[in-house]
Structure formats: C-alpha cells, structure tokens
Image (cartoon, rainbow, N blue to C red):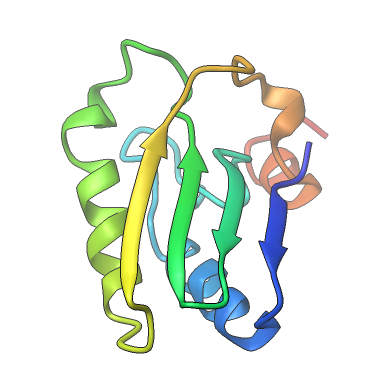
Length: 109
C-alpha cells in the first residue's frame, strides 16, 4: 500500500515526504515512509497539512516519541500554515505495506 497524496503543491509535498524519511522507528532501522506507516498526506491550497499515519502495532513503544518527532521535522517546513498528525490503526499495518527498499533492508526479499 502506498500513501494517498492529496495536494496540488508537489514540491512542498515532496519536502514533507523528505522530512518523514528522516524519522525512524526506534526498533526497526527503516524510516516511517519506507515502512509504509504513512497512509495519507493531505495538503490543501491554504497550506494546511494533515498526515494520517499508523504504527507497527497499537502497543508500539514509539507511540511516546515518534509522532512528536515526525511533527517537529515537518514543522521545519516554514511555508506550512498548520500541521496536524492523525494516528489511525485502520487498516492494520502489515509488513506487505513496506516498500521494496524496506523489505530488502529487513531481509524479507
């Protein structure tokens, strides 16, 4: 599964993705984008950003740190008017949601 991207500003959207790629699950040496944890990036014309994401499990210990790290990295993009992150567990994350890069990195391919 790849993220749903709703945005006209592709350059700014790519910068959001680039920032997300600097955030890693502390237990898995792969970034949140390649892990498939980002479900949706919605950037409206007013530059309000909504990122829907998940964690590898509801009991993931990263719930205390990872969302805050992701938000802080995204907020470094000063052109954004607002940033909101929304945690969801629907659909449930599975290893099939990882990119090929992540699957190779973790030895699944």
